[in-house]
Length: 128
Image (cartoon, helix red, strand yellow):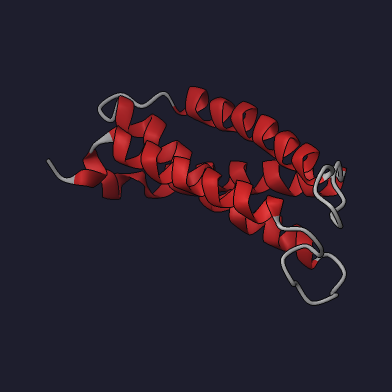
């Protein structure tokens, strides 16, 4: 079996994405050494969660590739990444030198994940 056709391949990729997110959020001090440009952290949140939303969408799609339920996939991404974004922000609030519970970061997280899911929806035929 081709790995990309197995839903658990995509879940493993998503789990790796989440593990890296946790490690990045656990770093004490500044937000990963980004230059002090206003809003750049929101772009980083959006971009990282864009990738996560795409990976999670691929997992959900591969569970039923012949009859994907796109509304269910997009809603599942929205709910899952709302929770992951909240958890990430809460976690950062307990890391020395970090701030957390930033609604702007959370919104960038959820927006990025939803965009990742919608872009995956457009490109999913490559996984058939």
